[in-house]
Image 1 (tube, one colour):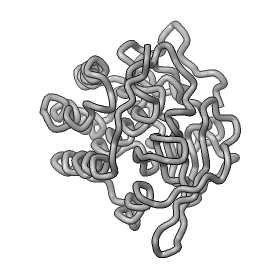
Image 2: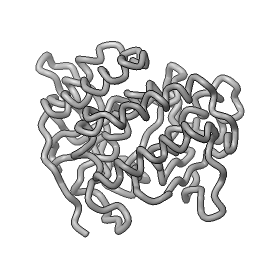
Image 3: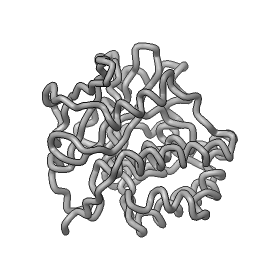
Length: 273
């Protein structure tokens, strides 16, 4: 089935981001903005893009790019063009880049997890997702950070987020430790499928009771999913069927109040790192 490629401009993308920020504020969940967040968004959306090279070990074409501002300053970002996506029979209709951006927007509504600022824009190889590059400790990954008590809550939120967006590819290396100690969640292209696809390395919270603050965040998201604004924001990023399945996952967690149990069938991505 052909992928439904939709054109976006910088104004429409910025409108979606400001829209979800207002929805987050309505539930007192506005995330503390990154320093110079407006400047970061402007650079990601409008900076002149120059390819620096392909990122290693990526299954799809993933480029490190330099974004140049009018004042001569430069920023690094990760560019994943639609043209470089390997066709996937079970993820039709919307591109992986659109799913990356939809995941970022939901993280903004909830206030978690920490996903680097992400937009959709045109580039040397056409439309794709563009995400702020994170300076990370590249020897750090989930498996050598999970036993550190300081990161337990971060991974608990990440596990919950992966369930609601139905993340089919949470590898250990998709948890980056930034230079300031922030744990960043990356690679959300395989998300929002209508059928259960959750494959993750983070299963230690299975069947636990969801902490009240996180449950309240999910309840606020559930209420927003019944209103027109969030549906409008996501409508050209995920399909109507995927949106309904998303609503049902959130509703199920709020009703049950527990993290999902480990499924008997394949539930860990390969390779795990």
